[in-house]
Image (cartoon, rainbow, N blue to C red; front, side, top):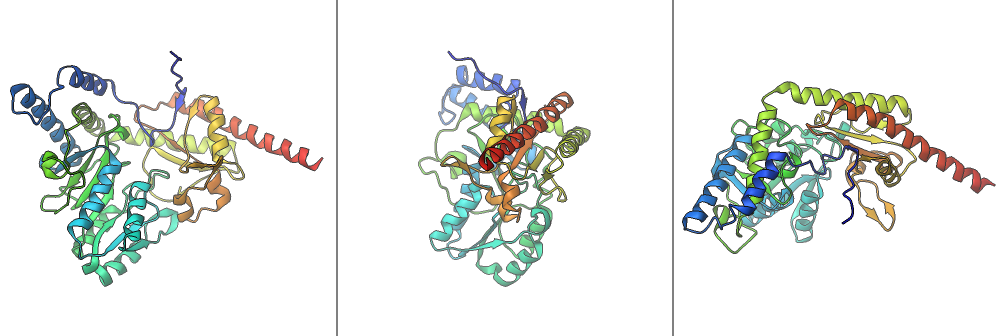
Length: 399
């Protein structure tokens, strides 16, 4: 077997987080001891059912919901799809969907598909720093509320960490009787959440973003919200999502929720990690004067830093950083050997020169000051090497 290669410095936690040790232990027990079907009526099956419902209760507590308002899914993408497509199917006479070009593709592409199928899509503009224009939303709601099936705006942007003004958005939607969904994948488990106090209708999230397993997520559905199911074939999950439950994943998610609640009880912990992020940014900008932080003026989640290195390609930066043991990412996909600028950054009106060279660094609650110190030594050196290579190529071309 080939040896497992691990980055020395993992700064890609918005992509996924390391599963906590106790999460792995609980999942192993689920695979070896609690492997029976939770829908079976025999005692072993009902023992598994009890553990699934305990996990549901833990997840519900994490966001301040009732346990019956939680639907387990295969991840954040399915949860967002269920929220939007389940709503439009349940409200066929409301032909308008409102969202933003800043959304994760799980929402953005779902909304685009609805547009291709004949729904009217209204894309809200964003103001300074990538925050949704509340005045534009207010105008749309005042003029079209009776036609709108759903407004879907993410809580925290996965690329920039920008926090949208969800409280104000919820209030506007509630005032006009319009259903609201938020993609909270990058919020849940990192910041306190109480859907009892904030009347969100639908909230999607994913376990592996807060030290849980991949392949399991959740959708909060406020009591009384009608939602058509998308996965057909069984009565599971309150008849909202058919199919035998992913017991190991669900139990792992429950444990991850418990650990997140424990971490969030100490408000200083998030502040300490935010200070590490700010320290990281100051050091990088001091060492690389051409660099800049995208959306530094907007409110951001404590763990996310999106830094632009003009006239460089993010793909080249990421490959060199990986060689030096630093894991990071860019909010764009490789296509035919080139890295296209992030649609989110372009929607924020970030110039293409900066968007092409933008790299996302994201911390977790496990990231240490020592790791940040190492990162601020390695990253500027990598940038300097790339710039030197570009200069050398330029000299060769002139010769």
